[in-house]
Length: 371
Image 1 (tube, helix red, strand yellow):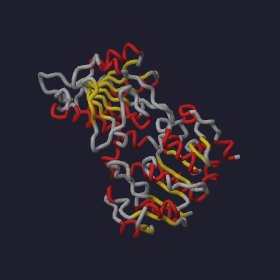
Image 2 (cartoon, rainbow, N blue to C red):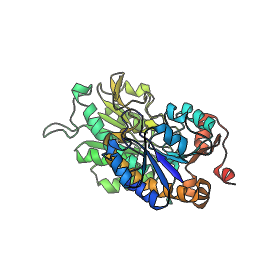
Image 3 (cartoon, rainbow, N blue to C red):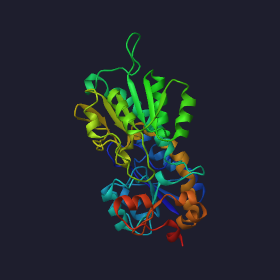
């Protein structure tokens, strides 16, 4: 199979779909790999590195889209990229379709077969292709929040860990999954006063056992959430409903109860955000203020640490890329139900139920597509 990867064009996105090492693996399996010139610059991988791995360098993304059977990316295709997709082609990348009707419409019209990293499952019902980026984003959320809390950046002027004689910042993490756990780890390590909210008793028990009192856990009822948000210096939104739009847990009315200069970091923004006042921002202009509360809602947080993120991502995406290239997408999905869970769009049909439900499309089960 001819596989290609392009230079990402989303604002300040420096990751790349394939590392030189991944290209070498694909070539060793007998596949041809095309790489847009400069695609790996953001992770310190030069064209020469890709050539040495057996890749073919192409001058423009248009050549990749026109000539490759499978395109491997990181972020959802932008409008200019979606216009180049075609029926019979495989797109393998993050999609986050539920909050993005325009992208969904374009993918449906294109006829492409689109496999989303974020809905591929693991044997334990986990999301293994989402996990490494969730780990990165969770950890980054605390350093981003700490920066936003600085007075010069519009925040309250509070140091997360405090100093002797001055209380540390109060950090509230909403959601105890991968993002929330990693955020809490970083916040605890910096000496903050941390509370994690979740609705799953098993998650709360696991977190309580892990942190051994260094972070508190609390069942996330409406009253508890409102009370914690009102007293927080920094709130991390770490809620995920796989494939679906994130629930709006923090309302605009709650902002009025918060201290001026407090910070909200919405890590769920890729799925529409879990704060009512959230809107996607970029690394070029990461924050905005609503009712005196600083919002950080960058939709591609891991792109800021592109090398770490790319290698962590390739570790989990490459095995499936090899299966698809070796077997063809249909045989690969038939052989692996976890990979099949990643199919979101195929030849004009929506094949992921949560996306179909959120955006009003007819749902076509993957099993029906696979025959």
